[in-house]
Image 1 (tube, rainbow, N blue to C red):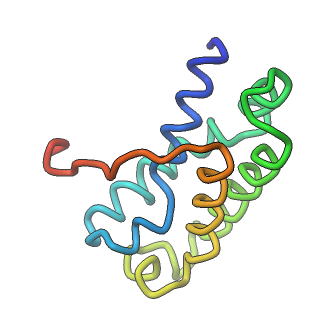
Image 2 (image 1 turned 90 degrees about the horizontal axis):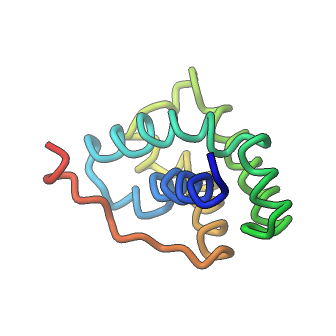
Image 3 (image 1 turned 135 degrees about the vertical axis):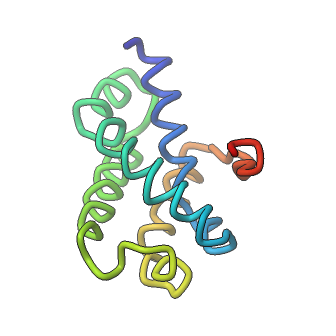
Length: 120
């Protein structure tokens, strides 16, 4: 995978996490965060995927470290009572969602809200 593809997957992964989810319905949260981000974060927020982006100037050290932290904090939520859309809405995920927002702001990336109607 070349650097451009790697970076595009990184951006796609980040597009599935953030405070915008608090305004989504439970189905959208389940799909976006608990399915899409869950799967993609395993690969594309891993140090082996991020290191080449850092080494080649596609992301800086702060984005690298925060991306690793995002992956780690997200993984801590697995198999807990918070692994559900209701917990996203009630604030239990706020630190994780805010961290994703910080990373996206840092790298200057904002993607329009996903059109779930088109996915059905």
